[in-house]
Image (tube, rainbow, N blue to C red; front, side):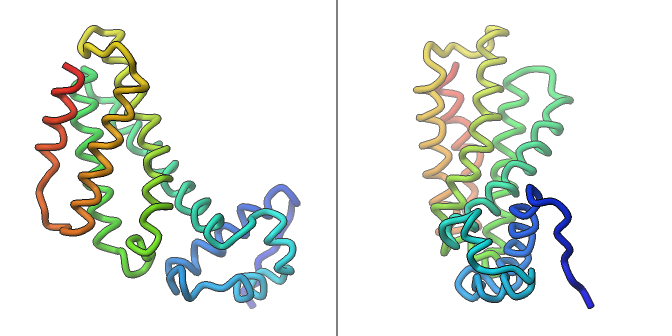
Length: 187
C-alpha cells in the first residue's frame, strides 16, 4: 500500500503541495479536489486549509515552486556567459523556450485556464533573475539604465505581452523582436 508518511509538522505543507502537484498534472486544476487529496494523504481538509486558503492558492504555490526551480536552473545556465548582454540574450531565450514548453503541455496542467496565476509566479521568479542581470550590466557599464525598477516594469510588460501573443499562437516566432525591444530600452 502506497501511504505517505508525514514525519515532521513543518514538512506538511510540502507533502500537501507534492500531492496537489501530482493531482494537477494528472487530473488538471478543475478535476482536482481537496477531498481527493485529503483522502490520499489521510489528513483532514481542515489541516490542508490551515496551510492554504483556497485551491487557487495551492495552485499558485505549486506553480511558484516549479518557477523557482526553473529560475535556479536558468541562473546556473547563465554562469558560462562572459557579459551581461550575453546573459540577457540567453535568459530571454530560456524564458521563451520554457514558456513554449508550458504551452505545449497545457492540457495536463491547464496553463491557459490558470494563466494569470502561472504567469505571476514565473514573472516573480524570472523577474528577480532579469533584474540581477540588469544590475550586473549597469555595474559593468554595458547597460545605460537610470532606474532599474522602472526598466523592469517595462521589460515585464514587453515579455508579458509577448507571452500573451505566444499563448494565442504557440507557433509565433516573436523572440527576436522581443529581445530587440528590450535592448532598445537598456542600451
